[in-house]
Length: 294
Image (tube, rainbow, N blue to C red):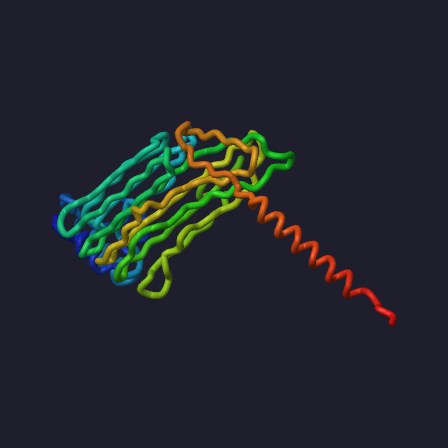
């Protein structure tokens, strides 16, 4: 059969959404870094047909950080890559930290995940376009909740710098007992940013869910940065935290996640002002219903 170097490169360059779709490895794809393509004539024909019929479908898998199902209940994942030609990925089920980078001028890519602090970072600075992504997840068991449970809120702060046509996204997802991340029984909150088109990077996203005593809830957080030839630096850093009602405690499967915050309660002075305002409002309503006879 005909052996060719660079068939994958041609496919990837012609398909604009190469980094957004992941398809089976058995299908035509871009050539990996330092890999020689071994397509025969039939493979060439298939690749050409793919280009002509579906120019918006990826022809190569692009590693992105993700949720890795396992038995430990916690983990981290990070990935950096410059499209279809080179990639670096680290993480997995049961890993509390992960860090990966790719540096080959003009590319400068890095991503980290640290469950102990809840910190995720993704930095993509590549004149030719590059991608960085990071994810972390942990499973929490709560105690001290009232009968029937109470609301717990997961928050992912989003701080960073975005220039030019850089874009990115962030996701929070929760799955309670019987549910799975990315599957049935899960809920999520997400955001996408593209300042060049008027979609700014928001300061945070939040996700509230009902927690009950002794039940396990898995919380998953994800960020990605797509340089697009510009700079997307989410390393300020974005941080995952859980806001708990008063008197509630939580344990994590990792044993290291400690970024819990108490639900804020108004100061006594604020409560006094609120009570006075409510009293004044009640008096006005009572006065409005009186008939004065002179």
